[in-house]
Length: 56
Image (cartoon, one colour):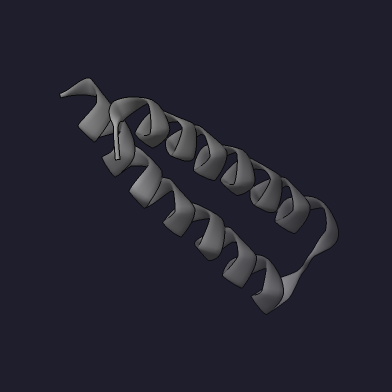
């Protein structure tokens, strides 16, 4: 995967993580809120790794 596609995928993952965390904070409570927030956090890990690939 070339650097342009990597950066596009990283941006898309951050976008999805942003909206899932906003959804979790506004609409959910309890265990579902934790699970959706954890999923959003886990989306940031590959995004960070893809950004490192692009920058290095």
